Image (cartoon, rainbow, N blue to C red; front, side, top):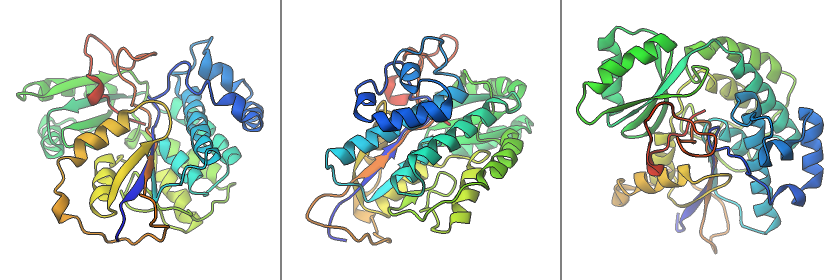
Length: 343
């Protein structure tokens, strides 16, 4: 491939903040009216003013962030920006990547994420925590040695940034094991559920039943899936199955970034939606990858007269302490470059 590919990345839940999308709502009145009708409340009022402090509640933040991400994408289209060669989204952001790729329309997307947020908000209580300074193998070894059997790996974001999820008591107890390791930090996350863990299995069953009523189209642009870090299948049933499995499976964001850069020759990314968490992670990670060893395994048919791009959408967990509607508990604070995207 004789050109540099591009990707657009869509943020996930956690990137939401009061005031997001304020300049977009007046540009897309039809879509705003459609969202209000589906959700039963003013999406603009929620995102811009958040008068009842609902924006950080899962059942509200998921449709709100999906909608602002979607309008951000539509604005790029309206402005004539050439679309990306690849799309990817962190957890919730994956729905925006699929929307951008033409797998479903914005009306369907709003219905899907509204139900997803509702189901996740009702899931069994659990906990999550960010582990910094340890590799995935080191964390897996610690989990085995601890004898804590109800902890799963939720998000693999960076080589030394991982999120664990599971039974709340065990998540709190796991801090002792992590903090014994030199240079490691353990930061409990202020969430009510154990997202991307086995405790979401029943939620996934309910979501599967809900998805049976919807039809999906093959992606017009490759979308890398959270659960495989590979392109989505073109089969509608496989798209449905992947969305269901995502609820209780790990998010392999580190592998997605590596594959985009190494296998797909992506040089440029654009984060489409609030915040810059995915952009910072991309910048930090790709500079560690050996450029000379890149092998292009997947050809892309496109106009090579312009550089390629990727749109990336963050997911829940991209927020961090001291952002509006802060995320982390206690006195811990992550620097901006270490904010943790999540769900």
